[in-house]
Length: 125
Image (tube, rainbow, N blue to C red):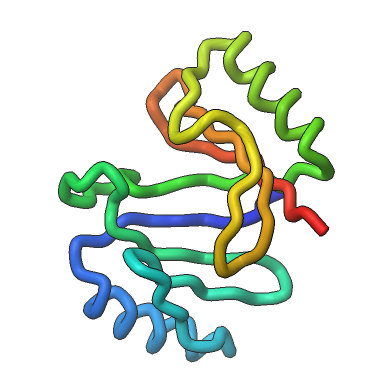
């Protein structure tokens, strides 16, 4: 069901030092810094720490995203449409393909009725 969990930070160095240590006790490899984010990847999911994209200080959930795994781009689009139809608002860029160090991803972002940022993600071949 989930693809990833991301939380916000105001200090990437401090966050990486902390999470490298605590997640290391669980056998999770050290995080990888990618611009303003640190990624911890495992076979079962990704945990990430990020400076908030909006440039404001991180607070609980500012910079946070709850990611849900989609089986296809079409499923992500349907997820996005259902969210809009049920009180969510679109955020970030419109649903679509993003390319980066993790490869090609199809992403669709929403803010739920309470303002939480959520995402449907499909990893493309």
